[in-house]
Amino acid sequence: MSDWTCKQVILDLLIEYEDGAMEVQERVLFERHIEMCPPCVHFLTTYRATGRTLKLLKPDEIPPDLAQSVLAFVRSRAGRKA
Image (cartoon, rainbow, N blue to C red):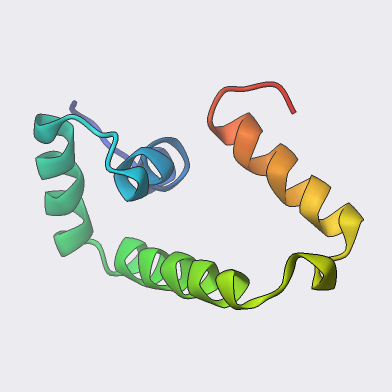
């Protein structure tokens, strides 16, 4: 992949990267970008912290509308229907 932008890295590849579903060559390029891009490092750190925080919540503590909005957003970014 060439001409990566932060938007592509963050929005298009992050889920694949975090799930371990990214091909080895793409993963190397992604990690190389992350190493050289402070805004992406910050976003990745925040993304991971948010994930850890959400895991601490009990399902009945999450408002249904929020859960649906988050799922719709993630599915839209992953190319699936909400």
